[in-house]
Length: 174
Image: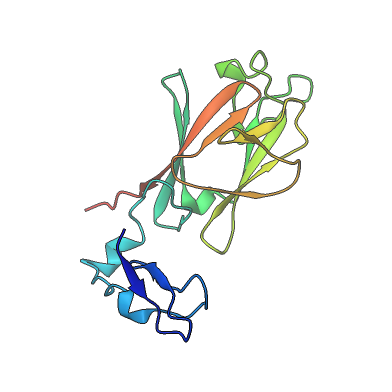
């Protein structure tokens, strides 16, 4: 690690790649790199990158069930309140994504287990709906009714059923 001297009065030595002096807090603008030009501004906001939380109207949401060759695909326009759970045979009520045929009951999925909501900030939020066996986001148990941002590549666990989140670009008819 190469060191440089901060221009502040203490003349402390800091890492040459620092953008801010750790001691005085001064911005070291000389170390900033130039902004890169986008190849196509039209495509940039629809490219799904691993770990991104950006989800807009030109994207699709894929929910892939681990160990089962099944994915639920939804257009961003209908991802407002997607309820994940299993059907209720007594009332006939079904959630948006019915996990009953995929072992939902034996895997510990509640009838109204969790909800994915698309907000105005172009992000998806996951909320546990006071499920009996809990909702986990990347291994961390969610507090019931507290929204958490979902990113491309995240894993959701409902009871023992694991779902991978994927953001995909909506195909444009030609």
